[in-house]
Every structure is written in structure tokens, then in C-alpha cells.
Image (cartoon, rainbow, N blue to C red):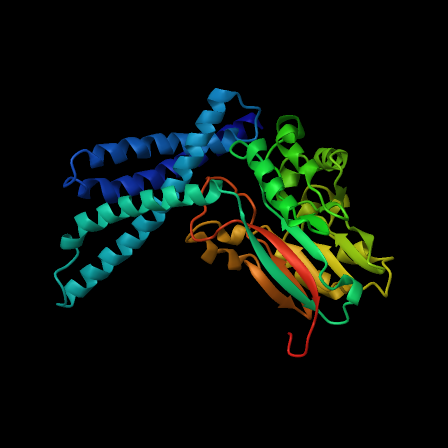
Length: 390
């Protein structure tokens, strides 16, 4: 087993090295016009090729200050290199197109574009990384969304749910960051709080103190939590107990009935779509989650980490599904790839008569970078549907 793990690491480091070598070969020879830029980029790429895989392999371990610093640097390099790699690919396509035009006698070929386009890639990547860092580290903005439900009783008209998702408490997201989120949610004074998974990236032993500010979330009916795929990477059973100790209601294919202004609202939660791959007893089961719920409840809301649970939750009879998981793509251009895996990427959608809302994420995963896809705290308000509402 140790030999296999060593072989996997060899291939992993080798792949990272190859893509870094590609960027070096395509950019550095064309940067000679700016003194010092070519050697500076060479040093950055060499460090990045080492720090990125090191940070990814170390990020779930207990980390002292020195290792945390290395992880921070590696994740910053990951964000910068992602932009460098994508823009280098696009540059090569542009240069290939210019060569093709020259072959047909149109244009002067790609030689005239090589130096300025290489400089553009480096400058644009740096600007995207800085802007993305600022976007990732600021407190998520509040997005207010009305959910029109037909037959909603008057007592539930205006019921509010504060949704946070995908915080990813870990090496770069610690207690002060989480506390700012809690303060922002509490200012909204919601009727309930929903946390739709991927709260943590690491063990209870390492991260419980950094997740503990969530115990201070305040709402009329409490905080409800469902597991995401990253809980299963991090020890889901231990986290379920830890979050219960913090006062959260963890819903594992089950529901609670809230009594609000004389009316009943069902809030259910299902385990992550992929949970059965880690524990067969945690297989996601929307029907089980709603079984036994009052048939005359004024609204039926389900928390489901991944949007692709929507077909099953709609079939089970829910009115609204709240999800996360996608991060909205987190930063360009990856937001264009998320639809390959998920039916919905961000915002409000319909699935077989049921509403689905996908939160873009309240934190971030991996590189501290959000570019073009801001984080969010969602305040959803249930309202009575009017004529003309979908």
C-alpha cells in the first residue's frame, strides 16, 4: 500500500510539473522585453510546482504555523497558476489562429503577437489573482430571494430562511472568518438557518474550535445542517456529533416540523448525493426524509447539498430544495464546467414543479480566490404565489 501511495504521489507531482513546464515553455521565452520578468516568472513557476502538490497533500493534517504558511503559499500559487494555465491555453489558440490566417495570406502571422500576448497573460493572471483574493476573503454579501409557493398559509407568508453553504473551514478559513459570517447572518434575524453542507475540510480535532462560532447563530427555530461530500472526506460521523454538541439539528434523511404562527412547516434534510460511497447507511433518501411528515403542512423544504438531488426530492413531494456544492464555479472559467456535472449552477430554478435554489457558497475551496463569482449568504423569504408566478 505504501508503494502504491508513493507511486500515486510520483505521478501527481509529475503531472503538476508537466503543466508548469508547459506554461514556462510557452511564456518565458517571449518575456525578454521586460527586464527581470522572465527570471521572476521562472522562479514563481518552480516554487508553484512544488508548493501546490505539497499544500494539497498536507491541508488535512494537523499543521503548525510553518506548515500553515506553506499551505497558504501553495493555495495562493494554485489560484495564480490556474489563471496562467487557462490564459496560456487561450493564447496558444489565438496564436494558432493567427498562423492559420497567415498561411491563407491574411495577416502577418503570430510572431508580432508573441511578446505582447505573453505579457498580457502574466499581467491578467496577476490582476485576476489579486481581485479573486479580495473577493474570497471579504464577508459574503447577502442575496435576498423570494420563493412564491402556491397554497402557502398566511401564517407562513414572509417566513425567512438564512442559508449558508460551502464555508470549507480549513487551513485558510479559521474562526475569525467564520465569526464574521455568523455576525452577518444574525443581523438578518431569520426564522431559521440552513447550512447545506461542505462546512469543513479537516478533522474535528483540528477544526472544531474554528467551526465553534457557528454555535452562536441565532434564529427563531434554530440551525439545521446536512452533510456535504467534504464532511465524508473529513470524518462525517465525528462531525455530526460535534455539530450536534454545538446546538445544530443535523438532518440525516429525516425531517423536523416547525410550528410558526399557527401553521406547520416541514424542514427535511438528506445526506449528500455521494454519501453511500463512504457509508452505505448514509445513502441519500428523500422519500425516507419526508415519510411521516404531516400531509397538510403549509410548506415542505428540503436541504440537499448537491443540486442533482432535485429530481428525487421533487418526486418525494417537496416544494423547495436548498443546495450548494457548485460554488457557482468559484472563479472563471471553471463556472462554465460545472454544468457538466450539475443540473443547476447558481440561483433559482424549477424542477418538476419544485423550486430549487443553489447558493454560490459562503466561503471557498482550495485557492483563496473568487473572481466573477461572488460568495453569498442567502436570505430566502417564502411568499404566497400570485397569478402569473411560475
